[in-house]
Image 1: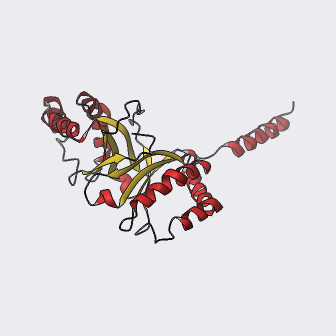
Image 2: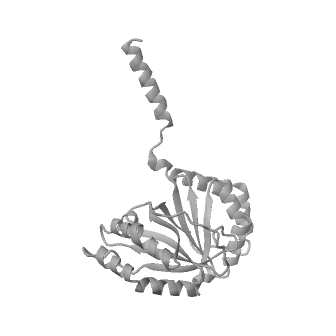
Image 3: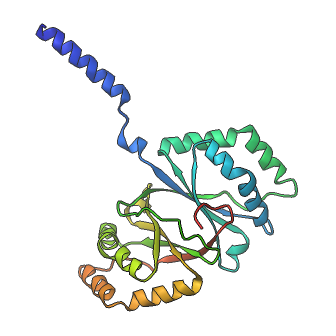
Amino acid sequence: MSIKRVILRLSALALLAGLFLVPAKAVAEVYELRTYTTNKGKLDNLNARFRDHTVRLFKKHGMTSVGYWVPTDESKSKNTLIYVLKHESRDAAKASWQAFLGDREWKKVAKESQKDGRILAKAPDSVFMNAADYSPKFSNDKKSDEAVFELRIYRTNKGKLKNLDARFRDNTIRIFNRFGLQSVAYWHPVDEPDSKDTLIYILRHDSRDAAKTSWKSFGADAEWRKVAEESQKDGRFLRERPESTYMKATDYSAIR
């Protein structure tokens, strides 16, 4: 075979390969944290719509439901739904939402469910997230109506997110496990500026009392105190106190 033919064949193979190669960023799984705030007295309507229709339609359009929760705080327990979806990619998320919103069944459901007034008080809040490399595979085999979940958001000082991640990867999760703090998942926001300084994660507790006991024991643990001190010799990681929201899983949430 002549050199010219070899070059042409290699060029053709490279072209074919290129047709099937998609940039890693475009195909990476992404998660979406969504928060809905309802008008007064409309949370039950929203939950009914999710229970009877929305979750099924999400699945129809390629959106995987991770979990659905209502905060336990007195005020937010009456008007707030928090949930997490998984998408095959950011582009897939965009296509799925377009298909969902254009779905005839969804349009009918949305209209009929709001005959007595709009359910949402404002547009949903949405945060796209990537799973941290240390995010564990959560075992959902301890389902209980007594369980509470805790959504925690950490915001770091400049340049300290990688240090915080290292501490969770090497020490924190292991010590959490020792005191019954069950890790569900850990994420970083996709978009700047939050992608540079924010960690979002969810813990599961057997009960609210168990959460209180676990956090007290964790905070007093000699190993944790040593880790916290030594890891911050060059400066504090967090620029503000962690944001914590206790939540109860809805009856239609896969994670309970």
